Length: 598
Image 1: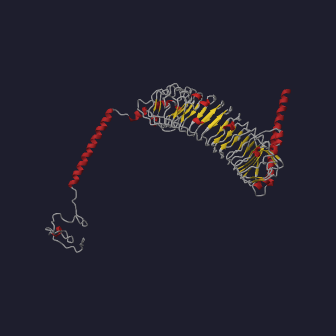
Image 2: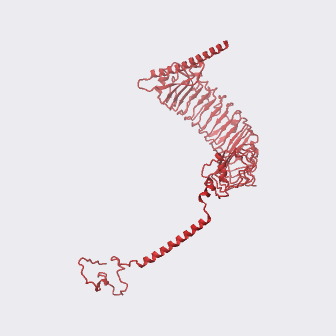
Image 3: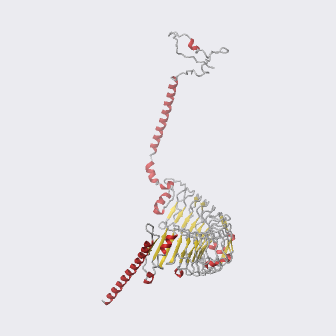
């Protein structure tokens, strides 16, 4: 009983504490909104509003209002300034100003608020008065100035907010950075500078940021990377340089980055790469560059590498030693060569990376799955491969032994090729779950080609977009597709494979004698129609009206039996009309008109 009483008391105390905390939170937000309302002139829109977060904090945090935030949107600087300064050093979790017009940030803009996170986004901000963030001080942990028109940053702007861990200056118009800007921010973990106009990275500019883990410099105008460009970034894990104009790199600039996990050089102008010794690097992106030969790419001592992308370059072939530097990258899972110009692959090219599980070769110029030199299948070493993407090439056939060594293969993507023939043994022993052969030139598949597949584990197969030829009574593929149920997932038209030959036979089959009788009746009908047509023609000739000369036809009014040089006078009536009518007396027609030619 005593235990029950203790439990009841503790429960009641908890409920009361929760109610007290909740009421304090609501009261705090209500008081702030009331203050904002009282500050707003009659008829004007309230510039900012208080919002409640779905959190239950301790009493200390509730006192600091760590579960409420203030939002100001579509407002002007005077309205926001007046509203925020109506508070009394109020602690907040966040203060967000967005889609407003805050060209200049005054010194005392945040004198009466203490947010942990401050956002001024898409508000045309360009000028900072001295000490704009000083009053917030050490409480500020995250500062977001994204999507404004900031062109430069004063070296003293961040001197009083040294506890900031995340700084977002992306999508502005910053063209130059100095070392002094980041000197006070020794606690910074994330620095976002993408979408600016930065063209140069001075040596040692990030030297004070020893705790920085993420640096985003994407979509700027950087042309080269010098040796000391990233000096001091010993804790960096993610470096994004995508979308710049980088053509020259001193690859020793990365040698001290022992914790770097992701390095993205996509969409630049690199033609040569030489990277080694990054023991933590997991993902390396070299897509959308100007690499034409893998012999110009030297990668060594990357033991943690899991993903490597060469997409959208100008690579024309993969030689037998091109990937030899990856021999120590035993964790490598996926390599992508999509959308290059690869025409041939050596039969031993993938030997150094025989453990990979995913290979992308789509969008190239491959005409076969075998090497052009000795006709040996170049995929043979990849016995652990699970996903193979070769769509959008020029492959014409799939022969025996070209895929059968891929014992772990689960997904085979061969759509949008020129495949006309697939060998009966092409998929022998494979554990395929997804097969895409759509949009090729297939018209026939040998019966039994899918016998080794486990129908219960088959997830998707697409054979649409081919020129299938079906022979009723001998066609097996259509019924087989019907038997696999939902695994048959065509994206296009299956042609005759969509129809059941049994149904077609029942609808259109007739005995031979019926066909013979129909033929005879058709022949008799045709003969009768010919005869009727002949009789009508003869009858028409008998009653065809004679030719009657036209008065206006000068040539036909001249009788053929008259001889020259005494032709008939065209101004006189037709000579035949001058002959007396023996039966009827000639009567003059006073109304007759004479027509003269010439």
